[in-house]
Image (cartoon, rainbow, N blue to C red):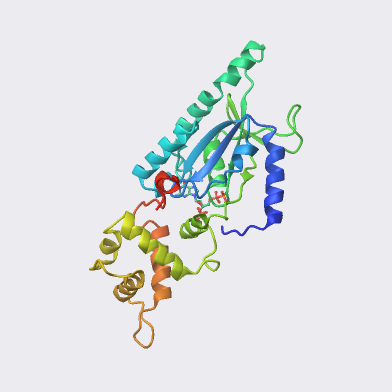
Length: 290
Ligand code: G4P
């Protein structure tokens, strides 16, 4: 699903979040493990003020596991609970249930002291489009999914999915918007295919990807396309070499850069280049930025 945001969308999404967040105890913030910080909207911090927070690195099956481990440490060091999941397969859900219990144990204890027993904690999922919210909700709810709407104490019209005796999940996720002001964000979201390629030129995207791969994953392009690269090759030369190897040639015999760019982006997005991440916590550290 591709998306475009306008100020009107953001205002509506923010209003919905503000309304729904009042009903819940814990926010499950979904990020894309390949671009955790770029898929994050820092406004969540003010929206979810006073709520228990869990960061979920979704699509962990598509990301570089070593870098995902660094992100996990990074967010933990900022005081978040962190889970890694693959919502398509359902991996990591058991650990997540344990984390929810741990994050909310203080509230459970408070309830117990007040004589309130067996009141489930209420959770909601939040994240930018395409991060996997619907897939996650289906997977987390699993077969045990029992909807409990329109009963006393439940706001009319809201549907809660009973995950187990301790947790209820709001069935509508909070939709956040990306932080477009930062150019890196738009570029990285486009690379994973969350922003229409027409908005950002595919050839330009492919150049960025080749630059990034040559620096962060040397050898990957060479292995995939059987290229012999030289140190002084430019991004244009590289794309031309891929075009040559893959037969992306125009009528006059010139390499078809656009076609090679589309092929490269498609190979990256469908993991034919491997499980690669597009950013590390260091990229976002002002002291270490290049
Ligand atoms: P959203 O509600 O946040 O907008 O996202 P949604 O669940 O629609 O997921 C967006 C795409 O990401 C879907 O792929 C979905 O299958 C995929 N996805 C979600 N979670 C994971 C995950 O943990 N691992 C992997 N590998 N993929 C995940 P799609 O191709 O757009 O749709 P479909 O072909 O799966 O139906």
